[in-house]
Length: 288
Image (tube, rainbow, N blue to C red; front, side, top):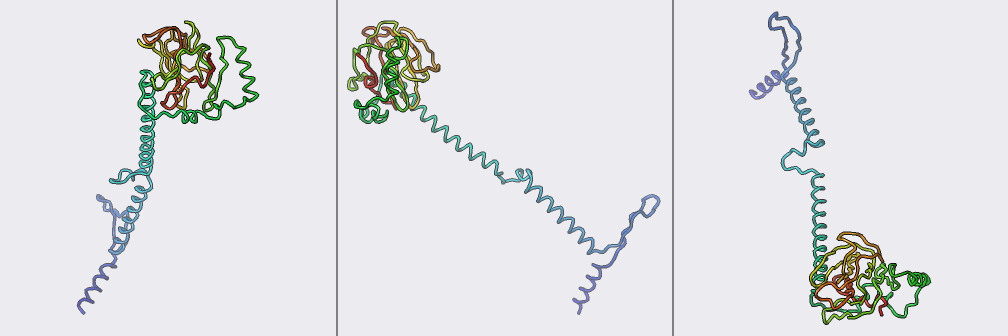
């Protein structure tokens, strides 16, 4: 009975009306007045608090303010981190390939070569075996091109050509081979006897990756033709191109000579390298 009475008194106090008057502090003039209850005040306060919480939540979760919440990572940040990680992996792979490539160039320049199982047939297959078959009959376009080149003088493109992975190789000079390619003796080139000052031509389009003078081989120039194909020209008397220059097939890049301690007379020392392995240039050109 007492509990029921206390409950009724609490409800009556909760819904009991009060008059709220706003007046001037000096004149006591009434400016505003209204009636309310304790429940009404509680309801207004609850509604205002709910609206304030809702607006705050919307501002945090649907604007950039959410990035300032501790422990929150934005989708853009995650996306950028993923892209940077992928780019880093790609750069690492490119750096690794470049290091291997420059090591191959270093071996070409110094004449060093690791002991590998050299398979001539596999090399031929790598550079388009079908075009190297001796029984291959020339096409009409090839016959016309050969006829045109044969009519050119010594400063133009020479006559022997061969496709190597969609590349046409042009004979750098015309002369007699004085020392053939010999893998067992570490002579990864052919020596062609020519007069001093004979123009040496690029075997294909490419970029000069090395152009300098060495004690053993005189003026040396190395061309990068892409697809891991390099050509090397040694014992020159002078160079006509500098490092990083672009050259076209058949363009004069040096003048032959008798430079270096390893030379035995005026000649061109010609090397071809594919994927870090030496290739016999004789199989691509017609020498005497």
